[in-house]
Length: 260
Length: 329
Image 1 (tube, one colour):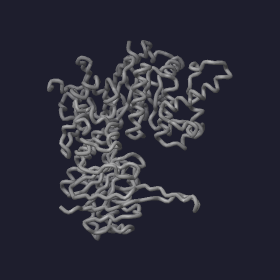
Image 2: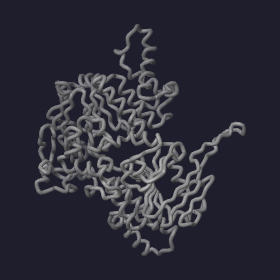
Image 3: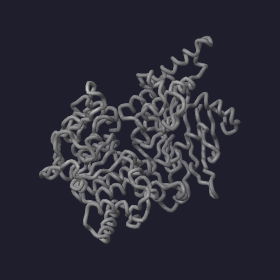
Image 4: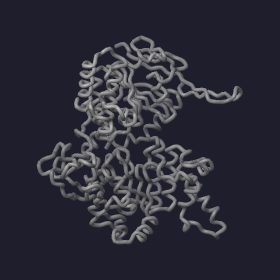
């Protein structure tokens, strides 16, 4: 199977303020490469400041990389070409409560990406919204509700609906499961796995919770200070972490205790 | 003797025409030197329960209990001043949202020095100021803040959330409490720093015999550190027992679902398999189901569940369910 997303030597650094003799550069991400196939999940693990959110921003196009290219299906994704990118790569954020516009109904919220990116007429758009809502486990009646009428888990489902409505190929989950309660979180994991099977999605999961990473991902990448520390199949890394940093990370979440 | 003994505590929100029962007859019992976990999802009333113990709930909440004993004295019969004196001497609490709970108008150093108990200081009155300062710096070192000069000078808004949380913990430890109520003490921190804080609390528990009530929304985060666990759901008592009992043989369908749904707990679970879940979502406070509040989501619910079940005790493992899973093991 050819790879869906190909990232080669992508890096990002920020210029810090200062005079010419005091100019400093902060390297957020050293050059890194990876490939991702359809139906697969890549997990990115690391502490705050390790560059995992920077990587997500680069992939989704919110930042332009200093070096390197991002290819989707063999086609290079140009920076600033959002029309091409936002159809195929979508993102779900951590806090679903604040990313939904409170003054729009769910219908209007989901209509916006369709209006901007597709040529569908109004009836077809409504039909698509209805189908997408059913796909994520909500009712089509929920279309006329406002975001505040939903609970936290349902809001996260709406952000998922907004992500999949354009039939993307890659979805980036930036800590999307962290703020949910445990019982809703497992519902959400099941839903995401089902959608992956149905639509052939590739996920990029950014998470702290190594339990979820172990369950959810096929490959994982451990970042530390902008560098890739370890990259490989998840089960291999979880069983035999080679780098000291990965070992520390695994130890800190007590992976050994629960195996009673 | 039990440190804290609470039987059938109810907390009502008095507002509008109909009072809302936010916490419905919850029992909690703590021995000296015990680390108890209080686990429940959002809206389960665990923070309310903690605030009721410390007595910081305002007038719109009405607290009732059959028994509310602190080391043998009934707190509900005491006057407000007497109660405050006992609680402030022996109990400390780490609040959620550290940014909101610290005073924004004074520096961290002043707030810490204020919290240091003057009974701990030995010396003449002209030495006390220096001693107080030293005690504050020592507290900051204890919770893992190395650069105390910067921290002491700054106001809460200048620090990150994680640093504020550490300062909160330092303030709570300043009075050397007998019981520490930690309401999600490491919510804003990263997993490696979380371990550091939990290790500090565990060592205080071992060395100073401090009891800890550890409140968390996630079962899997606290199991390593607790001796006993109480589980709550939507303001009702679900199950209580030792960590092993809860984790290996949960009697209540809700606890069973929590344990089964945690991918960290089941290492044998094949990757990418479906997790066991309860259907539906957590009920909101305005529309609570009658009887057992898990009823509409419970896989074992039957007709009897419209009446709230009584708590049954099996060798210290308490469960509140009509159709408990005890016989299935």
